[in-house]
Image (cartoon, rainbow, N blue to C red; front, side, top):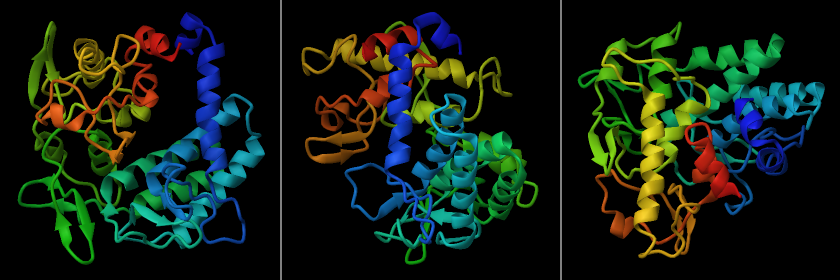
Length: 332
């Protein structure tokens, strides 16, 4: 990898392996359980609650683990295959979509959570990654799960925007009407062989632009939180590509990440935890529990109310493909 060649492997591999081990430790590997392969959202959550998005990242992590020889090909293959069986047979959902949070042992819905389009997309990206890497029955199972997703059902046909969520009690609610982490949705939905949507959906969400100091024309998200600029890039290589409007999403994430760091430098008098090597504002646990509003300019949210000085290490580290030098410095 180019980053390894530029900055060496010791520190990066240490972080990479510890991240990999999260998915090894926080998983249900009981082969007699209906929840085999389900992974906790974070270790501080209730013991029996899994996140389907966490499973998506965990499936992708198996590929990383095999490549680094942290897990054997056979063991990773077996785990991926049985995990996909869990989703084919037990994880609760509807029309190919799955509930955001499910019971680790049964796969049933927990906390009256939503049937989540974005978390289903993250899961299926991980499943497809395993399918392409391992091939065979894993690819067949991943494709079967992908083909079952009825993207048209989750689309508001009047606005050509995806709904934000769905629950049996409330029906559909919200809308993906502004740029955030959802770019993967449009690629998966338009490419679907069974339930393809018109590419026009990609052009129906707002792409607000703003400057932050010398960093110009950043297409920004509501809170300017870093994960929104990162998640789709975990699977889709946007480098060197521009859409019909001339947008380069990879370059945009570079600018947004640099703005996040600059914001932390500018605000370091307010929060001693902010600085040139302590940056990367993104949702995490904070003094009052989980907060989804930690972010930086440019943003629409009132960041004076959202930020409390919490800096999650994953923010800067997860930006390593956009700002390798700055991210390495933050890790050190």
